[in-house]
Image (tube, rainbow, N blue to C red; front, top):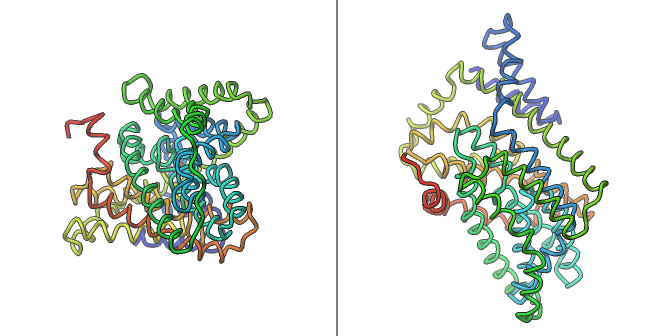
Amino acid sequence: MIGFWLFVAIIGLLAIGVPVTFALATAGALGIYLAGFLDNPAIVTQQLLTGINKPALMAIPFFIFAGSVMTGTGLSSRIFSAAHSVVGHLRGGLAQVNVVSSFMFAGISGSSVADIAGIGRLSVTEMVRRGYPLPFSAGLTVVTSILGPLVPPSITLIIYAWLANESVARMFLAGAVPGVLLGLCFMIYVAYVSIRRGYPTEARQSIAIILKTLLTSLPALLVPVFILLAMVFGIATATEAGVLASAYAIVLGLFYKTVNWAMLRDALVETILVTSLVMMIIGFSQVLNWTLSIEQIPQALADLVFQYVQSRGAFMIVLIVFLLIVGCFLDVTAAMILLVPLLLPLADQYDIDRIQFGIVLSLSLLAGIATPPMGIGLYVMCGLKKIRLETLSLAVLPMLIPVVVALLVIAFVPQVTMLLPDLVMPTNR
């Protein structure tokens, strides 16, 4: 019963507009009370420190800073031009460019909000100028921003790796192929819609122009490759890779002659604010998760589900539907920190690899970026382009079909996720 009341408290507090961090803190305090540990208040501070005192989490501020610097150096236009030269001639040219540039930028920023604010602002403006409807243009930009936290480097995957006690490098490798798959699903959807609605194509670029634009943006596009190679070959840990990525971002800014003190100051401020928020969520969630563990709620949930859902396939379907619903109401980081300790025993019982499970869980929750009422991507785009939330939400709904298709493939074809991790960093499990 304690678990039930804790989740009721969280949902109720979020429903009345309480910020996620304070909702988790309140639920954690309620859990301590219901579990009968009020006579030992030191447990709260002990669990708070236990939650954030993890070496893997040290990588988070460095990757946030690297992404902020990359965004601040004005890479958006270079990446957009590179994508335009390669896929602009396809059916629905600028819409295809939107998808490809989002994928390219995802490997640099690792953030959906950065994707929308950076590439999205430029993509939507150009698409509307060429005759695409604003709701379609804005909706496509929001939904393709899901690629940001899926393609390495990704803060979301770092947090999951910490929660599941998995290798960050293997999680990054696991996100690569699903990221490409999701991008291809978006491109197929765009081609279908463009043919039906008669959206225009762009002129085919010459080989010389394609090579020139790709070479111009190549130093930026090599960032995810640079990070993965450093981690896979043992040159750097996740934290050290984050430091190297930050240094590389500054050097890249100097190379493009776009870095300045004001931009670096803004990047540092954003890093401090975002890192503080993430750490607060992690700390308060640790208090809550400790209470759930003491009461053996994860084991009880696993036994209950296993009693009614016998097959692995049925469990995957139930899991995806559940997570898609949760993603509509909870922030990705908060939902992951709350649910991973509860759901991992279930994944183990159904013999699902924790790496594959992490990608399914991450992508399912990331869909919430583009779904009301909590979809942060929707609110960012409404602020940028002055479009009504209802109009944008309706435009986004059919665009979630590629996300569901990709999710089902990832869930039922484990090789999609496990190919690179098992090939590059095999384990003895």
